[in-house]
Image 1 (cartoon, one colour):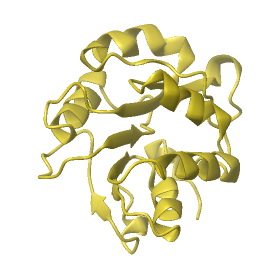
Image 2 (cartoon, rainbow, N blue to C red; image 1 turned 30 degrees about the horizontal axis):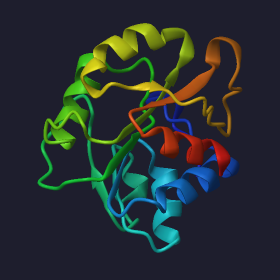
Image 3 (cartoon, rainbow, N blue to C red; image 1 turned 90 degrees about the vertical axis):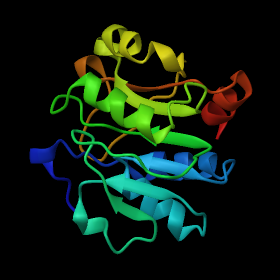
Length: 170
């Protein structure tokens, strides 16, 4: 399946999908926001997850639900982790924050992982201050994005130190 650049859709590469899928095995009810290829792999490994994305090409994947972060809506469900790989330019931080706050039921202790550009992290982390995100030191790799320089992307999360260590060890 090809990435949809017009919607800023860039897929994790196989190594990152494998690593994140293994990491998510530690959770019973993950929500994957804007990460449909990862969701497909998680489901292929017989783990339940909810996949929230605008790309209807994934509608045949178990757990897929159409979800637009620019027009978020509440889902009556609790997740033990939300992992998000958002577009970086075609949305407002406030929209992403609102979507994640709604998905977390406004529980700012909700475990959360968001990939984002390191060069824009200061503003990003200020917006998500309520969730107390920190740098994880984990830099995912993508099919068509070179993860360095101005394109360097890192996961920011509010995981425990043990969980961050596990993420980097897998």
